[in-house]
Length: 208
Image 1 (spheres, rainbow, N blue to C red):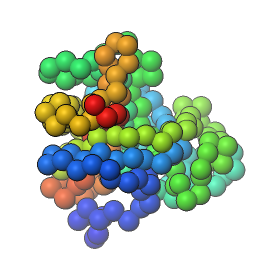
Image 2 (cartoon, rainbow, N blue to C red; image 1 turned 90 degrees about the horizontal axis):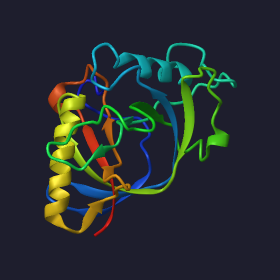
Image 3 (cartoon, rainbow, N blue to C red; image 1 turned 90 degrees about the vertical axis):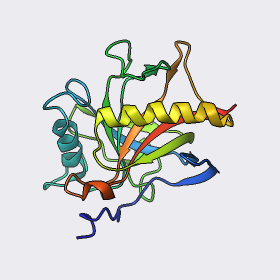
Image 4 (cartoon, rainbow, N blue to C red; image 1 turned 60 degrees about the vertical axis):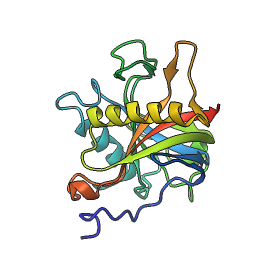
């Protein structure tokens, strides 16, 4: 019942809130290990949402024997992360259809209480899944409820970028093409009551 009401019982990434603003906060995250799977297409395109999730769920052993070389079950954590291709800082904010180096990916954050590095984590047997070390990072975060969809994440990304510019203390990190490093995070299963769901957009930032 708690999961239906939006209760989050899973381990979450270790972080410290270092700045509060009316519509967002800035967090400093400890290093994490990700298990990633690329979308067959784009996040939000018809028929693609289930595929990466199911493959990652099998890797940690949700549906039976874990699909990793050690056959070790791994505890589910929250949130599930989606990393779209990097996008240019334009208005309106849209996910680029080309020019990205990785494409859209979905990732499970492995429990930091057990896995501190990629070498600690069981090797996937599914070639579509890769392990990646996520370093310590500073991210501005805006939380929203209801559906965890690509279009809603992009709307909140646009609002977060606008709010960061107005606030002035932190600014998004950008590459030479002016592209922003961002992620969307979903904390609840699909059957949770929509207005009790917790979703987030996260943008890598530095002090202005």
